[in-house]
Length: 133
Length: 133
DNA sequence: AATTAATTGTTGCATATACAACAATTTATT
DNA sequence: AATAAATTGTTGTATATGCAACAATTAATT
Image (cartoon, rainbow over all chains, first blue to last red; front, side, top):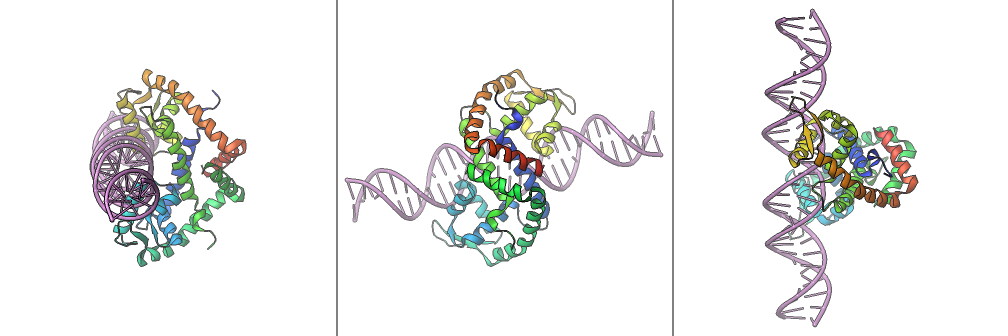
């Protein structure tokens, strides 16, 4: 056997993701949203007005997943949606306001993670990301 | 703003995990289990006979998640379970046989990922893992 | 222009995950 | 030994994810 079970890259990425997500959740306790939803709001802040598929493309999320995530954020009032078959979505004023409120919290999380990872850790992460994508 | 949204470590780890999990799923199409379930079977192969909490500890999984994951694998017949309140669980003969069948497939996946990541990528991953845990 | 093909979004179904509340058991205290 | 405290497992609820099948629309062919 070339590798040991504990080397499994899939398992380890999943675990790291869980650990970091747990940390995010701790910081987001007082907010109406989850870490995934925050990611989508941040993405839309950058993207502006787009078809929802663009979000999936950017985040490697399956169509159906995007559909439901968007739907939830829409129900919460954070999104605008044109009423075509493929509606363009964008942040509502409430969504934009929430992003503004979230940014400092997110920066705290990032600082916390930076303390753990260091400059080299960030560079390593970017390397791995490039190679995997 | 110190960081850009696309630098978000949580979001990026989640995405990398999704991408790699998708790849795993492709390889596991002909098997009766998911990539998560495979991880647990592999863990039990190493652990032997343990309380299920040990699995959660090892993989950073919440109690309730472990409970349900174990329950599913048990229903599939891959686990043995003593009938105490905190039963000791272990691989059943079927589970052990499945692990044996899975190993070469898993090695293929690992090779594939190794081709992408290289020796340095693996080292980077380990570094990040150490720093985050 | 009409038909065919491809794309995009939604819904049903299954698994994965965490939190909260609870139940059962084990460990500590007195 | 009896009671209190801590630990462990389960179940209800909510979100996250992907696949398959379908519907609606758009793009391509003829």
